Length: 342
Image 1 (cartoon, rainbow, N blue to C red):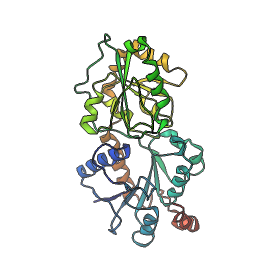
Image 2: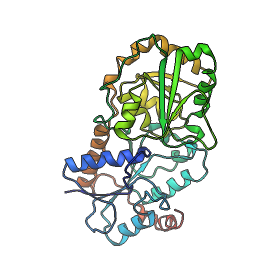
Image 3: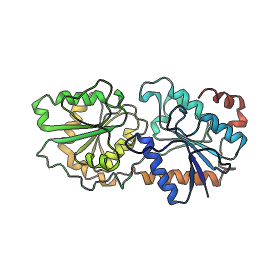
Image 4: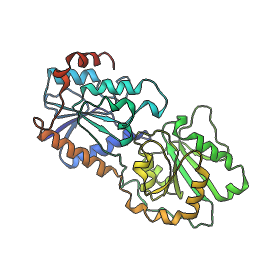
């Protein structure tokens, strides 16, 4: 029986996409009879799943140093999988990419939550393990189209978006643009926008409806009160917000940025900063053509978790022959250095 150490804590209540990922993965691990733990005390751990290198975070269960020491002194056969779901490009930070690269020294395998992450300059010359892309997914038991009402084309088209993080790069250039557009009677008769989640500091909407963060069924029910999901997030690594909206049956207006085209191609209309209004008009005119496709939206949590479990099984069964790149012995000095850089 495979035992997995999960590097991320589950939080009850509204939180970010990483929390939803861990919840979904635990459900599937239980289904298949896998064991999981939140620490590195046991010597019989088969897989360590690293999801965040920031040990200072209260959501992280163990540090990079603890992973390395576990592999050296407790269980050299443990397989360390590094799930990359962040980057500096997301919030214009200057530390995350280097932290991820340093953390990757402890990994035997790397998972990216979006293909575009692999193309970032920071990874082009720094992927030293086998890797694959596994796209995120949301829980269809919660996020589904039951109760979603198709737009009757008589009332204003109701747009909705939601983000846990209140960073400006979540798309507030577009959301504030819509807020200004709604000053005009023409647009007020055509559309509305609801924003669910946290706002940037000192930012206030004038015409957009704001709802504090919601979770699970409360969030799902609120999303389904609307007609079209909007995401203007910039450099989104591999979010879940777009999956939640799409699984609820809402066609998506999505920005040509980050992971969004990979997740949403065929399930809505892509826009950029310059053509947003024309893309919005296209959605208003062709809404029915897109809404009929949403039943086939593929990115759900069960599919995502099953891909992880399949990988866990394959790597565990082929630990000696699957090309696992163990750098603890090939690059001992760089490995030791990574202990002091996280």
